[in-house]
Image (cartoon, rainbow, N blue to C red; front, top):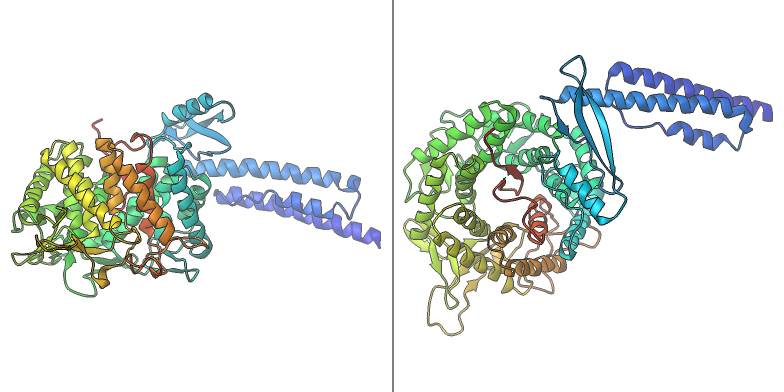
Length: 607
């Protein structure tokens, strides 16, 4: 009986060895990397040690271990070859991965073979062991070989709190919504909008900046193996561009990993047919498989902010690939919009994709117009301040804003930017408008009139008061300002019940970050810290994740809405992390420009 058992075990090990060898040959033949399974043989051998004497299996063990070693070498070689074949250009200074807690490894491609298109990697390993000086030297040395920002491995206390919040949010997403667009933390489920892993892709650059290597690598592998661009699904051009295309481009600029660039180029190609209208103004929605584009389901027009807030991303894609078609499409949009009659350079909410005509209506810096103004300035900055027309358009629109929309409340004289409807002023301001404080400060820093910085400081103070004056310490989505003086007991800020929700938005902390960097005033960090703690107190879900809430005025029952927007990780927590940095050298504002979803893209420099 024992002899039969021994023979059966030996036979099984022999079959396993032959199978492993065949798998190795198949891998080489397919010339593609696969998931590492080399430890399987060792696991099986450990399991049968109790069934057979060691001396009878030693030879087979040795053979299996030899096969495993050969398998590892072949897998590494095929992986390297596949990676080189994906590259569009020689990558002289490239990182395949940056382990942050084990070793810091860089790969320098500095030895050419006889085939000039093939580069042999020479691996140089810098141990992380040693004192703090050695650690800093390693980081500095590695940074010379990267285009992205310096690694943030050492965080101060407030940054550690933000990273902990990010991990908590990521925990819920990974457990209950992995690969889906957004987490529903209360129901422990997920929601699908575009089926493009919005939260995951939106968070790539934030994880990189925070030094979350494991999380970043897992997300990168999902993008490489699971992100399907060409699918039979309608997506919104604007949202897909700023969240997914922007996220992929930033991840590529930080890492130079062509997985991100390949996906970005494919996505850009699938989105381009949206611009194939009679006028060149893009339709709002497009099917990523068929390329059929159409207006939104609720009307015939596109939102002005949506068609004019895809330019940074498509221009960047042209700058990387050298293919002019991306920039040509979005530049044409800007020319069409500028050719239309406007009220003192202020745009209405809607534009018709077929005719290219603006539809007169509400003037606002809030929803459906907001980021049009933001991207005027940022396209100028992205060009290295060379394309002056964008600056001129921006300055004219800021003059229009001051003339038509800038007011102060009573009794506290809070500066705000309202709306105008058919020539009549409405003291309504969306939380979305709070981005404008940062934009004004950024413009003033780059030569816009000094008065813009004064307005920026006053406006960001107002935005903070939208948090400070609420019982939860969180801002509502929309507020109205009192402009009647002399009324006893009147409040500056009025919130209507339908507007009392908070969606975890980033605009205020975005402006706090920019003003903190440009003015060095410590008050902005303090305001940001209070806002962060309010998020922690009222929106955190114990099992993982954060949720938007329905009523910022009710501390006992703010009523969580069971939704964690992707921008909470991609924007809000990222801006808070950057705000709390000891210096602003992580992403210098003269070298990087943030898209509307907080994805950093490099300023173009002459070569």
